[in-house]
Image: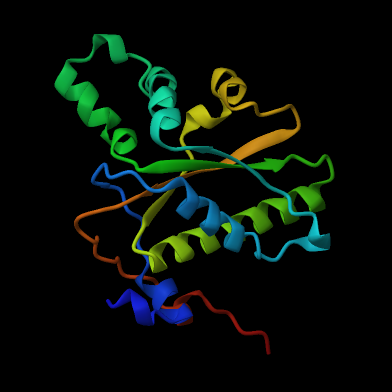
Length: 189
């Protein structure tokens, strides 16, 4: 698909989650611009209920041992080959952004903030796709681990709602079939 002529519809339908990145770094400024544009996501009361922790280059390399220790609890017992395969979903990434949202005690606001941040993540994925940068929205269990939260500077009353990976890829994955809307739609009469 020619990315120069992507329409919004083309981007929505054509975007794929990339799970196999090629290890090429993504420029920090490109990610910052994507986030800048993505913050135009709708959000109730213009609360802008998000903040970001970004890791690229050396910063990301320094984060990998923390990820390894939490994502693969028995990593010391694994052979180098198995450990490398397990870690490949993290080591070939070109950069990562952790999207952090407030955990408002009021349920309505907490849900609105999470929905707004989800729209922001989708915006970022579409904007990156338009630039030929792949993304994958991950929510691994270690995001809630106290050691990981502390490493990122996540405060009490905040939650990491997304580990958004950015990277380049050699092969675009095929899309999967979607359930037709008519099978999901109920009309009131």
